[in-house]
Length: 119
Length: 108
Image (tube, rainbow over all chains, first blue to last red; front, side, top):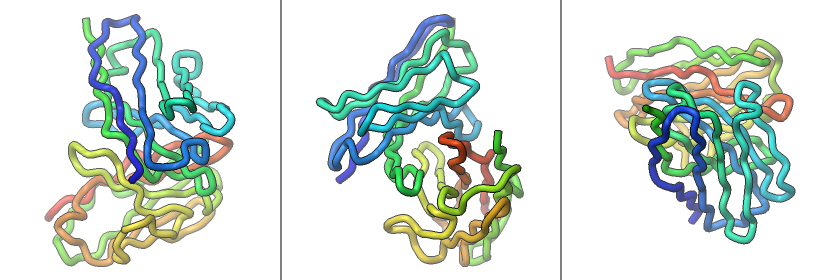
């Protein structure tokens, strides 16, 4: 079955960087994309960016451009999301999600990774 | 930027009632790229509907989606206890995705 397993929670200082991983299994990795979505405490979903696993093309939300980078390693079927210059309002649960590129919808999700930014 | 506005913010209904959730886009959205998700507390979102009206695998037929252009609707024909959750619409426009702010369906 399709599984997306994310790395564990992180606590970071303001100004630091965090890198969250998402290991995919149970499907043809390069036939789908991976999106990253975050959710601040008590808030809604915010799309951050995505990567095409077939060719490595990326797109990012305008408000995060320059601070976020998404990469994919096809040899390990793992996707990474790095967020730099962390601020307290980056505290959130970060999800990876498989993207069916035909319908541009996310049909499988990771379990989420809590990133806490605090001094 | 194409903004998605969901209404109402909260819907208070009883089990067995019909729920109608609205998602309005500030610019036209291709029906092929409008999706709905359900999220329960402490869980990741779950895809319900894609292409505005196609149910995802395993989604009961009490969930239906409709609409085109700038106005889309998610309907739950008869609410079951497990349907009380937050629902988000999502669009894909200009190679970017955005979510609506969500509608909470709560037990009356």
